Image (cartoon, rainbow, N blue to C red; front, side, top):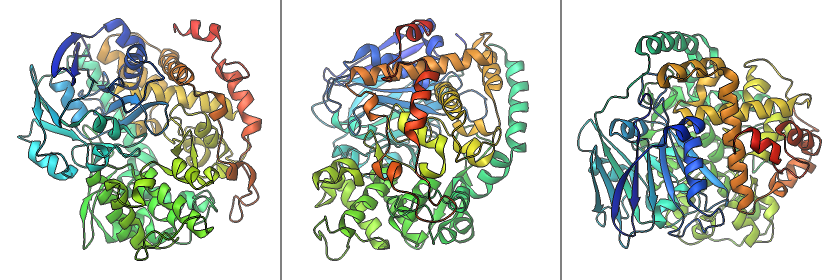
Length: 593
């Protein structure tokens, strides 16, 4: 079996039993792996209406056929479950080495079901699988848990922190210490099952269909990545935070909870400043020639990150210009196991509630006021431990704002907080937010690439022409990439033909670009079906009222709103869905659904 290990590990925590099952290769190839295979398994095994934090929900850890192979960036995996934050299907992506190690242990996926009576962790050493007592690990931070469970160089650890244990709805799953499957609250699902960690050890090799062609393609793909200005220069030099000045420069850098798109402190908190003042070294995930990861140090903390989205969430969104405090907030998100985007955005929404006199002063020493650098660190800890008002914020910005009578102040889609691009300044990207199957997400169709970076070609960011077609194409291609085990960042330099060729060389198929895109479309429609059956329909394909009705007040995007009402009908048509956003029977049949 090429590219796949051929085995699924099923773990029933209620019964305390594990079982190894054979992978259905036909299903695996139809849904590729990773995000696609995880979606198919979840759809088949749970009721989409299930309570996400009940034992009846399942959480699936699944890599792709290119995970653990020599393919450039071949080390990513997905966490697929029903989200406690949004109620939608959640498929959260992470890098590092854990995903590849799962492959080396001999498994394509782990399906966790039920709930343990006490805290446990899963210990996998190839064919030896044990459910072990984790009582002494419960309450520990991610760093300590990782340290204690890492036994040798062939072992990798995935875990949750206190946030996941306390069912914080914006909790992440962490692996290799500081890599995060960050979005949609997947860490809370692990916590609801009393599963603290998964320790994986293995040294198996992944069989490849044509090793020589794999080597040849790896060489040419790596060269493309090195020659590309984004993957060969910008990301290696300044990390993802290279975007701070770029996005601020077009007036689409959300500031003070999206009240404007221009941040005065952009230069002080940019990737360039990070590199100059705090960067210790760059880091790379498994088999990655890009190396966009950062390892930073201040006089208080050191560790992995921060990424562009993290810097934005704790700086511009909260109007904080102190990069050292941003790095400290990022550190505590890593240790507590929190999604940095949702955490920073929720703090920003609370700051606006207080600014408008809608929120009582909860802590006189750390007021929730824009610009308060100490507050971002203070409230990150409070959220992770569910202490005081942090318990309210731990539910995410939508539920928090709804509690105070103003849900419109939550800058979220389907209750998932929006990331660092204001849709008023990037019309196509705004459409991806509104139609993303997991809510406000920038990596379900990264339209920043053509609308801002000019890759693969330059599109005018404020125009609407052909944007629904481009959005659909990017969404389908992204679904395929997420399913392979490769990093989305490779798409700055590689195209659908490249991915199809890499897949063929590893798995032994004869796919063309259109086959890869069709697989992505199949996955995207199956996710849509899950959401529809969960009761989440087209009424949620929208953006916060502010972005649709309030013109950008200043900067290069001044005077613009997002024109979603003009884009959405055409998007549904391009997708082959009806006017209510429902996939037609003909569309589903054509995709084999």
